[in-house]
Length: 412
Image 1 (cartoon, helix red, strand yellow):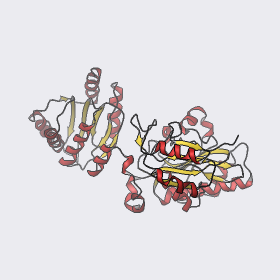
Image 2 (tube, one colour):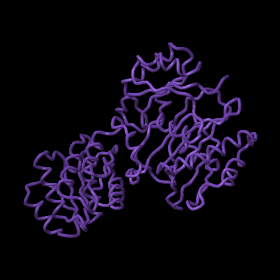
Image 3 (tube, rainbow, N blue to C red):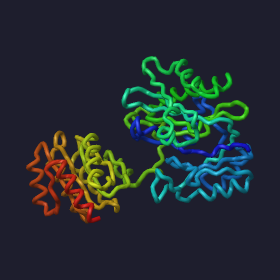
Image 4 (cartoon, helix red, strand yellow):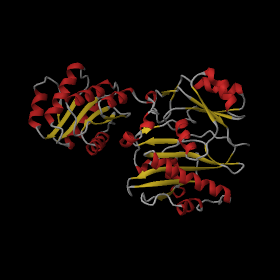
């Protein structure tokens, strides 16, 4: 039976590399960049309405065709966001069944993401599938190529069940990607591919490194990278995430950002330069400093609850930023308690307190509020909160934070 590509489950090896954040590109956008750098991809045509389907059918040879929802989430195939079509009728049904509809995967959450664009591509006859990805390994602090012959599968599952199938090459930024490193990965395969396929794999690896460096990526993934029946090496899927800290020198890429893919609260946070990521929990948290934020989320989990967000207001936050950040937490209807954990340094405790009080004047606080303040102007900050009329619980240290959070979530 002809093996036609439809798998799109791709994700970095988070257990060892760390959670990756940044500006995500759509598959079709990543493939345009791939093509410019010499990485072969299937011929495809993007549509955003049913009226464009006939044009796409003329532009893309088939059968078969692959119809793929363009959303920033893995697991599209399992969620019905990737369909194989054998004729024009099936292409139209699949496309119209995706456009304008929400697609829910494990990464999007229950409500899903509305599909506004669909990619119609050539089907590919697959002989072998590989996983190829590139990230920065936080342990070695080096760009790292990840390769596996278990392509088409979720890489976390491969790493958990058969870690021996996950191969890595750390890259010295001074020397860059070297040919022998491709050989280290390719010659580990069993069975060993033909010389032509080995050459194609080596070329893709070298060009993935170029894409990663040139575009300031935090992640590049191809899953699967396939070998076709006629021996061609093709990236049938593509995923790219751009490091937020490097966007100032990637102005062309900024234009590719799709606000439709972002959580409305995250978009609101961006306007005020707040580091906010919405999560699936029930305790909202406001913290200054990424390290303290991670520790605070651990405390929330240890108390039997789950964080509803990652909100790091940073050391240089002003009263308005604090106020807007607090408002954003209050707008999340899933939040059942709010924890403010601030160690005053550059961000003074009195500034934090004034921001919280200002937000409380515009938004009613309908859930328990737990506050822990330490550091610069802590007494003044506590006084401002005490005289504000707000009802809140005071925690002296992280142990008491955990205790108070636990008591609150038990009644949820």
